[in-house]
Image 1 (tube, helix red, strand yellow):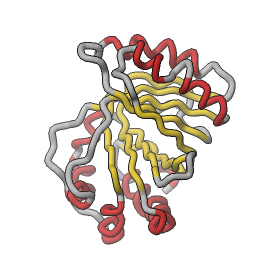
Image 2 (image 1 turned 120 degrees about the vertical axis):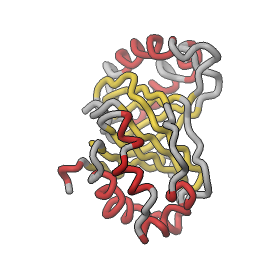
Image 3 (image 1 turned 90 degrees about the vertical axis):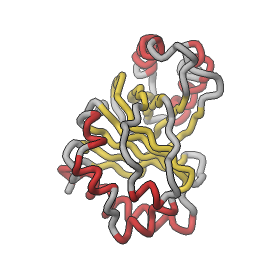
Image 4 (image 1 turned 180 degrees about the vertical axis):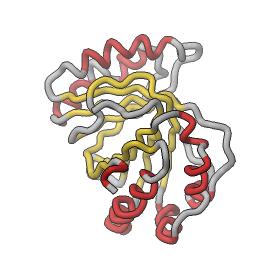
Length: 226
């Protein structure tokens, strides 16, 4: 199904192989249930690199943008559990984008997911959504593709949290995020190198050299699962 709310938290990081098994157990058995107990958190999904690397992508569907600064969420960010105290420092090269959902067409959950991270050309912010929406609608009609979603980072003014300090300080953020979900990896590769490739993003108002990553679904959950 499409993104469930009007906001989303999109995160990329690397996890050392020696900690991967424990990380996935912690993330599945403690962290997802903890986050999904917070009002406004509607769905969580975790994805691992399709290239066999150390990268992970995690997406939280949020009811609205105000969830980012809600007291219940801030309380959890500033009071990590003992297990979180152990795992958070192992999140390397963190990119954490607090986003507004601009477009969501088709499904988010499929076997494979491509993520584009990009910045707009100067003065092109307003034009990017209108330029990309027809491409998203065309892509989801292609065999092998399940959905496409456009997010824009809008980092709220908030103090650094205890979890951020555990990761070494301020996280990086992507300016814009484009997600394309598919059930066939070859079809997904074709679309994100063609119809929704770097050249298409640049023509829509993105700066050159956006960052493309490919992931496969590991786990997904909603509050009802707990």
